[in-house]
Structure formats: C-alpha cells, structure tokens
Length: 96
Image (cartoon, rainbow, N blue to C red; front, side, top):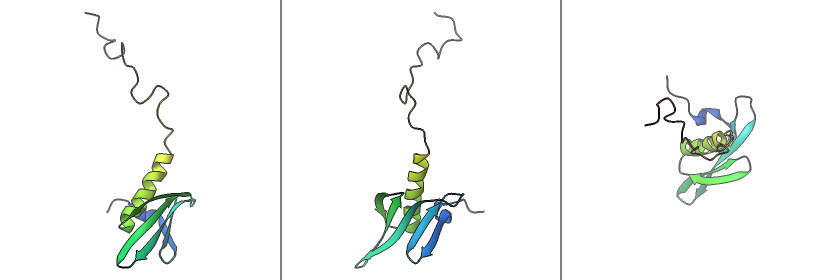
C-alpha cells in the first residue's frame, strides 16, 4: 500500500481548484492552478494566508498541509526550546 499524502485530503470542487479538508470535513486550505504563458504553477493558501507558490500539485498540497500541522502545535515550551537541565542530568550519580 502506498503511503498517505496530503493530496488525498484534497477535493477538486471546480476544475483547477483543490480544497484541503480535515478528517471532519472542515476546509483548512486550498490550491489553485495558474498559467502565465508557458509557466504552470500552483498558488497555495492556508486559511486566509497565501503561501509561496509551488511547481506541482503534490508540492502545493504538502506545503498547505505542513502549515496546517504547524498550526496544531501549542508552540515552544514556557522556558524556551532548551530547558535548563543543570542538576537533572546527573542527579542519580553522587557528586564527585
């Protein structure tokens, strides 16, 4: 079985417009195909925020899905990313 990809969470309601939805069916982003002369690219949005354009639908849906996943994070811990572990790392060993 092939691994899951964010493209599988997208719905093409209108030609050239894909909407990404949560498992509950709530939309969290969309992707549009655009053409400028010979150049084909995909514009990406997470909620109301426009993300950088992508060169393929696969890359565009991945970009939107990563923005969605990062929005689920509570953020950095209150003490920062690297807590002070002084005295905790060697607490099981007696002082030398």
